[in-house]
Image (cartoon, rainbow, N blue to C red; front, side, top):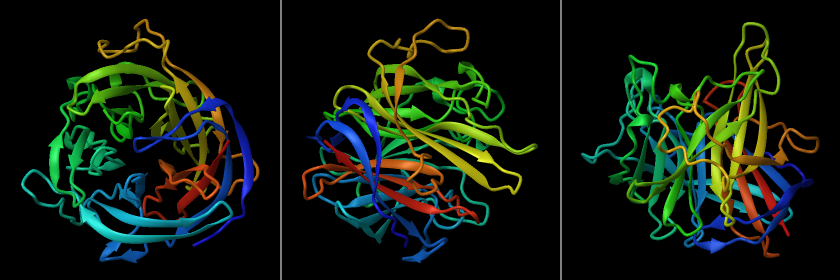
Length: 372
């Protein structure tokens, strides 16, 4: 595992508030990069292959981390890991993987791995329940298999407790271009500061909401606030950037929302990730962290289509450009969580990347101090 030296980073625009569990974090005038850790590519742990890390969370009430993988059962059943992160204000020293917990279906069975994988789950975000310490996780589904995205509530051992009922508009349709697109559905999830509701973010637009972003135009994605029972409280449209650079000729590029966190002032912290393919076939990642204010945004929950509709999107402001000088090369960052306070009382923020189990990609964890 690799350690980099601390670097001071961009000051946040305005004062933000954060939430870890039910506790209130201090105002956040700036982020200070402490260090990086990497996990060996395809490292074996407890009979599983590490990688594909798509979400991370910290249990503020009980201590300890959860890291979830979006392995579509091609290597091991759908799962999350207990983890320990060792750091202080001076250094990010180690990541230690702990017990493996397999997500179970309604029959109490795991999502068994096979050479072709499974078409029932693609886990993208994980959160500890701030009230009882149980687990909530989201899947973006698989349109090719007719699998719709979902949000599920599970015990710490992975046993299914419930599944949130969702509006029909999020459903995936294998034979029709409506609803959720392939690989662009429920990517981000966060509890509201009071723990009574959940925010769930799409990665990209529904078919009805317009085309996906490219290097010439951005797109809009829906962010929805649900009660714990699945009732929609509010929804707004968030404007995603255009892809910052063109891919190499004949290559691919994409951009979307990869994770969110709720802030005590009613805003959301949004991790936008662009992936741009080069001639070599490898991807460069362009990552920006935004705060979005939806206080003047329209409630879009009653709009079946955003394309052609009249509505006001949320406003956003740049918090941090992770491609700035002084940072390590950023990889495919997908997970983000508030961590424990440092000895000086300041909060922490951790991000994790998904290596897609691919050559030339990296499992990377980045640690930041939230400075007052």
